[in-house]
Image (tube, rainbow, N blue to C red; front, side, top):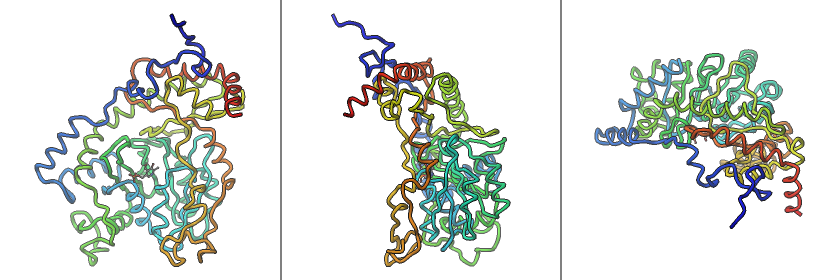
Length: 440
Ligand SMILES: Cc1ncc(COP(=O)(O)O)c(C=O)c1O
């Protein structure tokens, strides 16, 4: 007969796992179904009504709902979140020779539309506690060419919008809110995406509101809205969509980029939006429970939130990991031990943008030495970046561990997550030793 393994000992040291499930079957911890019969029914009905192109009734209704939810005068759906940011940048007038400030810690699509508008990305540091753009560091990087700052509500946590709006008011530089991770988040009671000059959302398949693919741009600024229509919304017309005559002479609208959303994607997103508040409440309860539990464990810390910020969307669940308080057990060693417990933890999934070859080394986007990412060798003045340029962000991101976001957790899932972390923390020294030996 085999001896029962000790459940108090980490699997990595010969014990039994906290979770009965294997890492691969962890889906069972979460009973949430992102897509149900309701979305299928919507697609079925829209297809039979041939609502397959353009600003159909469902698309217009969804945009109206978005306006009402966010309290903005305008909202226009687009094909994806990247197109939403592209439209927002064009909307605020980003163009050749401009600079756009963006935290290095975000997904590439927060900034990748800038070089396509002939503008230069200028990266900045994050606040190491919140992982969000540091307004003071952004301020130091402003020049007379700076024409926008990206406020990315990364992982669903809300930026210091007071700090950023003060900066915007003092310098005249508009704030673009990237809400791709933060559907339903608020700051001091105001919906994210409605605080800066323009907000942009993604409805890509893994987002809290998904259309498979899709996106939204919302603003109170009529010119930003009409320019967003100008770049991507073929055939949006004066009277029905556009409110001024500014671009009437350019009808049919369209500058060679067609960003109009697929109505079926918007139909799916419209069903998902009805479930957003419930989804957010469930995710929030789970995350708060885990964060409260780990407060008492040495070596791990919840990510801080700004006063008045109400996180939502919860696209990821990062926590700080401090190897020096864990007997020197490396972040990867910690993640590995958690995974052996059956907890599907990960290291930080997003590389810092200044380390990506595109932005570090530059690139001759338009060939023949043209474009904002051309270095002097390519014929331009782009200086590129190197590791070490953003020490605060680099250190903070090297110490992040991501826990699973559970939307409808089974009973005591939070307790089990905490137990797995505590168990590994309790044996951190022995695990560190084992890890060091394995590396030799
Ligand atoms: C922070 C952020 N911004 C923008 C985007 C772009 O959204 P999409 O994939 O819909 O183009 C993403 C996508 O994941 C994102 O994570």
